[in-house]
Amino acid sequence: MADKLRDARELAFLHARCVGTGSADTGKHEFASNVARDTLNSFIGNPSLLQYAAIGLGQTREQTRVQLLERMVRPAGPPPEDEGVGSGQMMEKLERKRLKEEAVRLKLAASKEKRAKEAAVWAKK
Image 1 (cartoon, rainbow, N blue to C red):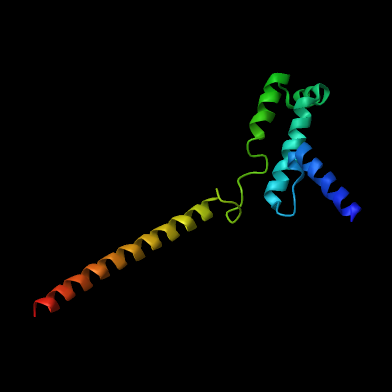
Image 2 (image 1 turned 135 degrees about the vertical axis):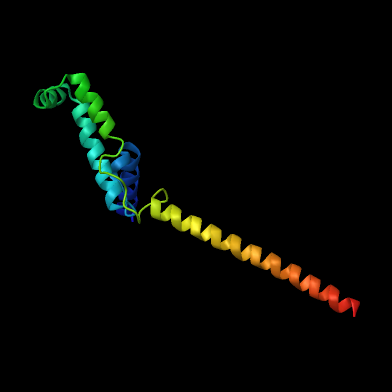
């Protein structure tokens, strides 16, 4: 029992200290993005590695640093369509669901109006 508690505490500490460590719910794209960001951050934070990359690219250190910072925005490319709330497919699905619910609501309202008119006609007879 104590081992499980200690392991859970260590894992919580690791997640608090290193945000990109992930969990069982971490997707493949998110994990790849975290690894790529960590790598780019290592290059930016280590002057020797940054200089080495700058020489290889034929740029100044500052140009290389800015380029690496820009690559940190989407290091693993755009997210897959089926993963995450912000993905295009998910947004389209939510929009279709909202439109369908709106159509059902309007249909019910029209049906109620129609029944009310029919009831009024029957009441006059």
